[in-house]
Image (tube, rainbow, N blue to C red):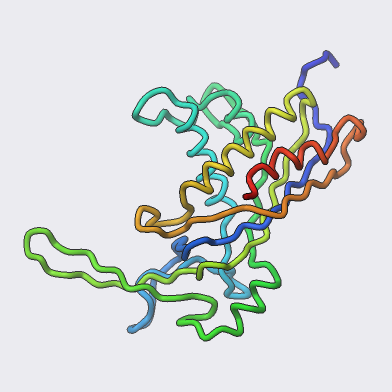
Length: 233
C-alpha cells in the first residue's frame, strides 16, 4: 500500500467529564403529555428516565462551531463545503464526495456521583428543574407563559468520543481541531435557549485510551492528553 493512503490503524477513546455551568435543555418529545405536565421536557434515556446528552447534539454543535470559526463569510456555508479538516473528522456525504467520520460521539450519561447527588435532591421532576419562561406579544402585550424542564447546573456527564486512527501524520492536527471545537463550546452553549443563559458547559478530567492501535508506540497518549488539558481552567 502506498504511503499516505488511508488505512484503519485502531482507535483512541477520548474521555472527559462535562459539567453544566447553567441549567441545560435539550428537548425531548412532549407528544401526548398529560394536562399539567411540563410544556417542554428534556430528553431522557428511555429505560432509566435519566437525562442524557445525545451524541448527535454534541457532535453537531462542535462541528458547527468549528465550521463557523473557519469560514470567511457571514452566512455559514453548506455542510459539504466545510473545510477538509472538518470533513475528515466529522464526515461528509455529498453527492460526489464521501468521507466517513473519524469521530464517533456516544450518548453522554450522568456520572455516578451526579446521579447519586441529584436523585436525592428535592427537584421539580426526576433529576430536573422547571423554569417558567414568558414570551410577550409585541402588539397585544399578552404574555404566553410556558414551563421548560432543565437539567440543573452542577450536573456532570461522562463524555466518550472515539477517534478512528487513519493517518498518523494527521493525528496531532485532528486532536488540536477537536480540542478547539470543545473550547469553543465552553464559550457557547449546548441545547436550546442559549442566548438566555442555558446550556453553558465546561470540560475536565481528560483521559486518553488506545484500543488495538497498530504501531502503538508511535502514539503518545500523554502528549495527546496535554492538548485537551489546556481546556481545563
